[in-house]
Length: 109
Image 1 (tube, one colour):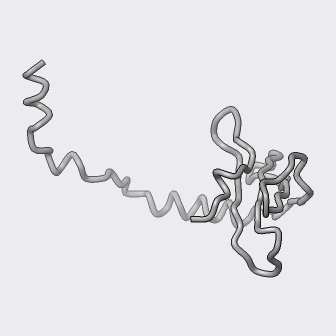
Image 2 (spheres, rainbow, N blue to C red; image 1 turned 45 degrees about the vertical axis):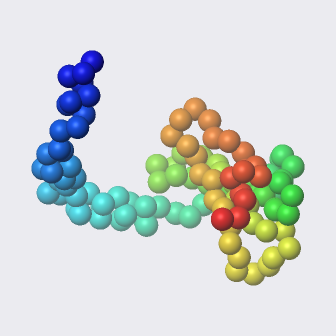
């Protein structure tokens, strides 16, 4: 166990801390951006089914991804505001589920 503690105190190799950037990184992201920009903007917005947190309006967004598959998310904004305003957008998570807008994820700050 003491040997492990000594290992933990060794200085880090600075070369190992450098991020790996593939040579074609810019081309990769340019292709992704072009694909996203060429996809049609096909969405609808409707009142969310669940009760919103106090002071907020929450709407459900249904839209199509770049590959055409149906996706959904939510957008929350202050109830008393109109025009341009701050908002919080929830989009599909990469996992099995995504939590609904609540008082913790929509609080100011």
